[in-house]
Length: 89
Image 1 (cartoon, one colour):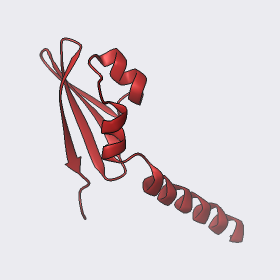
Image 2: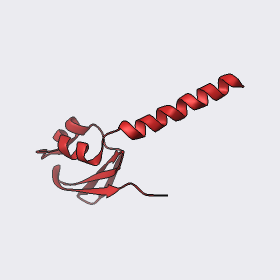
Image 3: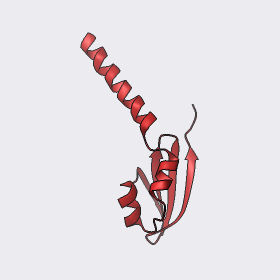
Image 4: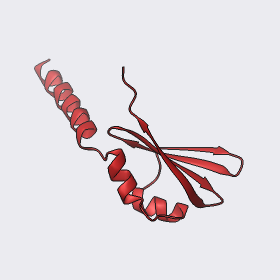
């Protein structure tokens, strides 16, 4: 039982630290500065956490420690970026 507690405590601490030290919205926007294409965006930030497609429009969403950054993409070109604050419970 004591070993289980240590494992759970270690996992909880790891999750907490990941949230605290992950990229912020500002970090993501800085890394994506000057990016024009989906290839460049993926090279700068990696695969998005979520992709939504509506006809020719795509939304690539990246999770940040303080919210989300959403990029609008049309025909492979990054056209717009927006941020969302983290939801408060």
